[in-house]
Image (cartoon, rainbow, N blue to C red):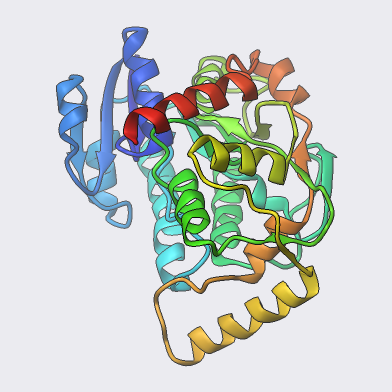
Amino acid sequence: MRALVTGGGGFLGGAIVRKLLARGDAVRSFTRSCYPWLSELGVEQVQGNLGKPDQVERAVAGCDVVFHVAAKAGVWGRYDDYLATNVTGTENVIAACKSQGVRRLVYTSTPSVVHGGGDLEGATESVPYPDHFEADYPRTKAMAERAVLAANGPTLATVALRPHLIWGPGDPHLIPRLLAKAKAGSLRRLGKRDVKVDVTYVDNAADAHILAADKLSIGSPVAGKAYFISNGEPVVMWDFLNRVITDAGLPPVTQSVPVWLARFVAGMQERFFRLFGMTREPNLTRFVVSQMSTSHWYDISAAKRDFGYEPAVSVEEGLKRLKDSLTTAG
């Protein structure tokens, strides 16, 4: 098949691209910039902006399936920027799929679309969207997910996947930020609880996207649904993070601050940054406090049942691969 991957030069997008190529599919990537390594793999590249409908149409034309992975992530920034990329951009992808006759759309969502700030333990897809979000990223991703699922119908089959905390060798976001803060000595545990979270090795997340796409068709059991994706092995958050930190040759984080104090400081920083129009990310935000001080892990039995998802790389194996990559890079 001919597949379009928006954000094909990114961490997850790149993993999906490689797996599609490995099984013989033709792949096109839609990104803002050109990625030489994609060209070396034989990937057709289209440069453009998700906010420009004509550019999205050009990228979608002639494809059998679209993997919409690209998004504006992060925990801080202008709401209008998140809205433009995550919501308007997704609406443009949906419109282009319909106008170009694409019949399958796989959307990369996030479990944070249902995280309202408390514990979620063994949560299923029946958990509703919360009434309040503590950051614009989950707020706009929830808006986009709703649009994708609502677009499912007689001419376009859609599915939304919610992979949680994607990590692995080559991760340009989570792992480098963690290690930079650990090296600077600025990391602290929030509270005393041993909260548990789900993590998703990047290859497993890519597998889930391709398996879902293969099962997706007009009127299929997968169509119009959202699915949690993870390794299926909830980890104690700081056991996992300290394993990564010590594997990188740094001392583990042992000091902690009370959750109430962290939330107070985060709220004050957010107000200060907004008051003075500061664009850089605060040291702490309320969303990060919630994510770091609560348990959030999910039941992935629906993905196993409906499209045969099984995490191929365990957490332990993933950690070994990550350590090898850190050792090689260091």
